[in-house]
Length: 547
Image 1 (tube, rainbow, N blue to C red):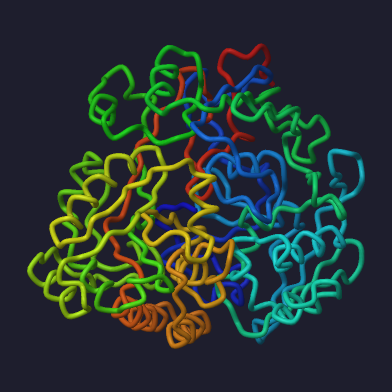
Image 2 (image 1 turned 180 degrees about the horizontal axis):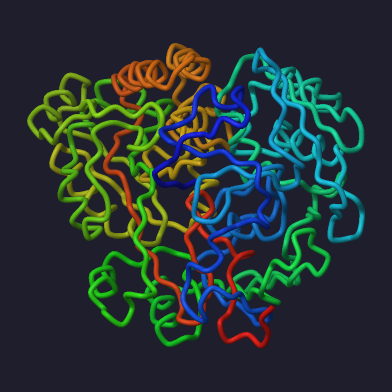
């Protein structure tokens, strides 16, 4: 869920660059060649070794299973505990080989990816990382028993549909050629597939360890005490030695974001796991003493409202259209201290497929009431809207409630814990409306569509909280993925967005930015646009040794 402006490919493998967003750079460097290690505070650019990094979150992780993980707490833990075939370096969107030895070899027709594994890698229990482990890890995503929220990203793999119905057999599209070679066959060209291989869900776990996954990452889980803490220790046998730099990461759980900020200012924690509360944003941004510890980054992200198209009254298109006229986007931005810009369509700027055309409706109370009357609800109706119970949701949700009241819709506003929100919103007929957001997993419009609005994602456990399915929109997205140029893809995505927003399963509100603050003794700090944190490359400036 994340990302910034992009850079264009150097075309080391032209076949990989069929459709790169904006100016994305794809490199074959390993994570150990990161050039951003010295971008934080502290003793120059020289890393120091040892010490403990302390962080805090409001919520527990839902899981430590990469195939299922989709909340902020587990997201950062996935990066610490597991490796993927590919990852991103430093504060860039540059793809780099991680568990893979190099970027994939892609056939001329764009369908077959052949990937060699890095030699000498082992899991934390000492067993070697093999192609069989990769096949096992990826196949689990498509197994309905896993209830993976990103299964829709993988439906283009050969045999995926059949495997989802009968996961007891082999998945023909993902095979181990030998112990060190993985081959993946797609049913159609997909210019975004290389990014999918770098997603946290593509983390590699040891075959047969689904109930308690074993990884090969830079850190090893020491213990997890729900509601209290997570502790991970440095993997002394990690392949990318001398990283990681710190000996231990202590994650405090159940800490309110406002309290997190206070603890960071006092030096009691090093990093905040949740965004700076909107009420504290101006205080932080105007505090000269925090200037060296503060970064503001653009996030290609969309904040939006969903309506469950399978639940009354939102199964009525006119009701959904009425809601699309309810909100004052400019005022919503004021509630988050102006961190972002008003949305003009669904996809955010910087993403392949974004158009500057205005495809959303401005607030029009009279028009909304007229549509509700035409839909058979002249006196409105009552419903429920869910969100997370953290900032900025707790600031936005009451205002959305007020806006909807103006058109006659009485909303029971329910801010709940992140993990509970994901379960509820992803369960059919449970959440009539949600206030949510999406930060790009990779810089292509398909990331938003396939995960959030595709027919394949309109399943229990998915991220399509509208349970929206329009096969014409799905077809346009697939056509964009096979487009020969970025310009062609942009035109097709714009058509898909116009068609989707005519159905109004979602109401885009604004595109977000994020201001981050880090502790005085954090060295090498940079915000990783995809992941958030890059704990492998951070150090404590107060640690005892340097090399």
